[in-house]
Length: 357
Image 1 (spheres, rainbow, N blue to C red):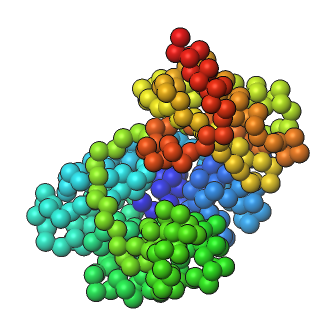
Image 2 (cartoon, helix red, strand yellow):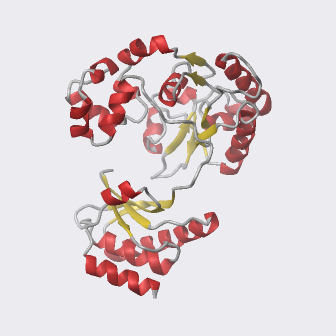
Image 3 (cartoon, one colour):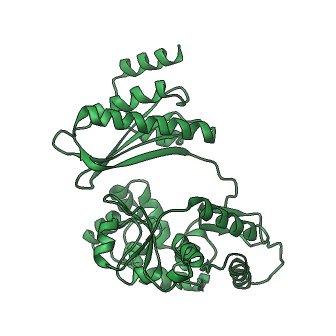
């Protein structure tokens, strides 16, 4: 979808149409969730601090989140998707992959299907959508960004080499700013340059993701569209109005986060054995610490001691903290092996026995 949250706000408030608008919390620690295309012309983008956005556009409109409305519109859109195929993989509230190889509508061309879906979405919601069409998920995702907003772009098999070759690496799906910067330092700026680096070397530099980047540079992505979504984690985080350095204050904040996390776990009936602590410091640098236990983490009495122990091992005395977050997840066996374990085996065993008893 095109600027999903912001587009819904402009749809529901005609006086805001054509004006720069963002959705998010208008406060000292507020962050932009979505920016309208009018706001993007000022350089405003999602994840930007609200204070910076307002500096870049003094007459910026700021709308608070209305998640119930966004969820309802998302439900409408997904119902339309399922009119054409059962193979729908939701990526987020406003984005999905559709495998239309065997369309229910028997339309011969994927582009015709995309045009029909776009029309139905507009008729049902008044919102525009953009579509990317190709023979795998990576290429379809890249294609969906080319003609935004309200566009369609197709990448045929014979176009892949040239299209990927001239694409900047920061526009590759899965390559963020830090990874792109690292590639730039290696002299890699385009898909063509990435393609010339051996997979072995990419793995040496980027770990397992090196193989993924190597395949992407060749337009290879063998992942199927999966329509059975399984929740893999439950999390919550708090950004503080003022940076915190006091141990007692941080413990109090951690307690409130645990209470909220336990409630979310209960509501979603989630079962996970890995707890991850996220800490963001005053300078926006961040670290994570994780531990995997032998029992499902569901209660405050199970989670809080683990969280406090992980926080105790973080050096924050000269680095005030602006955000704390906790996540309970159920990663793969391989991920479990990779995740932390800077814990004393005897202490963890003793804790597990105490909780299980």
